[in-house]
Length: 99
Ligand SMILES: [Zn+2]
View (cartoon, protein in one colour):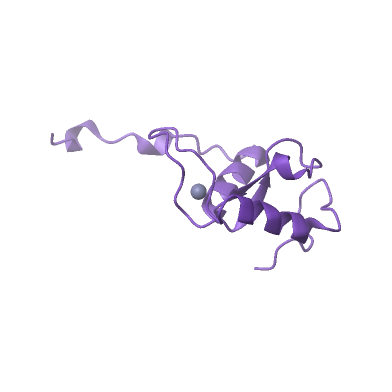
């Protein structure tokens, strides 16, 4: 899956995106920077994507962060909006709870 070619993002990536991307990945140690809300710990997955913290057109190094593909997909899906997969799935059947 090639990156950056004709993606559906609204803001175009800068010409030096690959340089910025490498800087950000190195800075973050090639590890996902997502902080888990339940444990307060950083995700331990390998970072494969660089995400915009702020606006999609704000490409400053300090406004970029490394994410694993899973967390990046999570964010992208949320931004896309129309997909309503917000937590309903985790409700377990009361009869199945054994402890
Ligand atoms: Zn992650």
